[in-house]
Amino acid sequence: MNAVTGASGTGLPDVALPEGADPAELLAIAEKVAREAGALVRGRPVRVEVAATKSSPTDVVTEMDRASEALIRGRLADERPDDGLHGEEEGLLAGTSGITWVIDPIDGTVNYLYGIPAYSISVAAVVGDTRRAGAWRPVAGVVHNPVLDRTWAAAAGSGARLDGEALIVPDGPADLSAALVATGFGYRAARRASQARVLAGLLPRIRDIRRVGCASLDLCLLASGHVDAYYERGLQPWDVAAGFLVATEAGVAVRGIDGLPPGEHMVVAARPPLADVLAGELEAAGAGCDEPD
Ligand code: LIP
Image 1 (cartoon, helix red, strand yellow):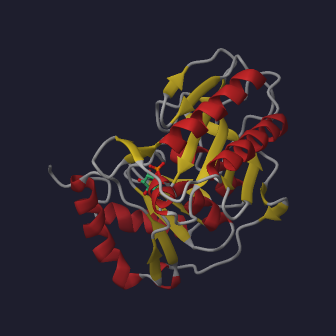
Image 2: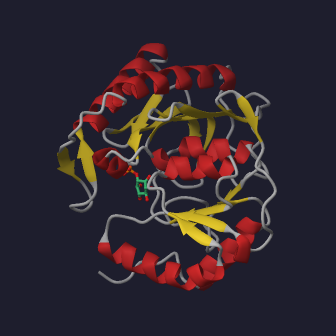
């Protein structure tokens, strides 16, 4: 193992980088591949059809999700044949190098379906076990919005950038009453019922809510200072892997609630100490539970 192992202070676990792996090289590959997929996704037809549904009738997949993931997987397999691949549409293909690429071929698929320009291609190189929350960390990551042609990028220990400019999360409100908070909602009714209840309690006590509809962009918008905090229950590694790194490298703290690491149970992200304040509110509201089905 080499010396670049620490993720201390970010909220992400300390998982060692395999010998010889270079975050800067991985980032260059991630950026090239994400931009290539972006060029494909930019060719959105005027009318987009739903190709299939997943966890609920509103959790959709389009042909472009599939085509984008196929392109990304193919390019990464060419560049780094020993790495694992873990994508939203095609699942996990284990590798042998210790690096796994975590891919969301279109994050914000509902925005893509409706032509709202808030969707991204998210590509991250990760170390650890991507099947278990708290057992992996991103070491290079890119979130590319192909419509606005904006690219957030980060390599572990080297900071975050937006279109090449260094990003440091700006100062913001110290308490929730002045905070602009982004969040998102799952696709299943029982989860949404709980998320609506939690939101109803929070909304009167914050500046306002934003529901962008793309978790990777939520994390990047936080890193860029366009929102003050972000939380969401139900996120998967492909939604957050690249965004986690952009956010933490910009100085954002990422954490979970109820003693659990950030992951499907809950992701809370904000500058410290606002992240802890928001996490406390969410714990008190029981945000880590769904309503009964
Ligand atoms: C979606 C997110 C969205 C979130 C949904 C879902 P998809 O990803 O980014 O913001 O609220 O739960 O995970 O399905 O568009 O790739």
